[in-house]
Image (tube, rainbow, N blue to C red; front, side, top):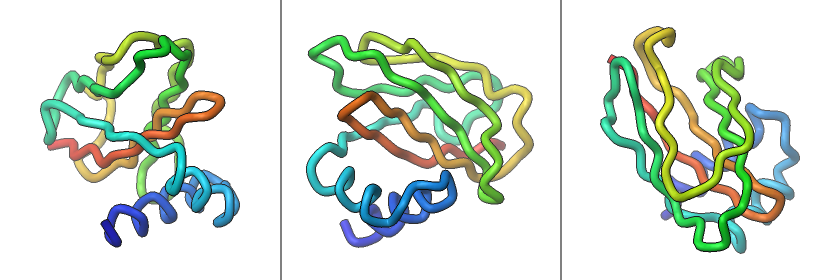
Length: 109
């Protein structure tokens, strides 16, 4: 759990969020995000809880803080997207609505 909180804090700081905002999101509004396959080569699918059918925005960021993928208007409880243009390595995945936050790591091989 400690490592997850550290990863969320790092991801939030890389994306420009204040430490307090990231901490608040991790304490009360954080959800589980599954990514399959992981590692991925061409396509990846994220799975998350969305019983209320909220609209989410997906951001994928490299470890240098560059946003390499951003998609909005995501509904449902899964989303499939292309990762074919990404270089090999580790990426931070964030899924955000107005009051929910999901995060995970995506490995590209």
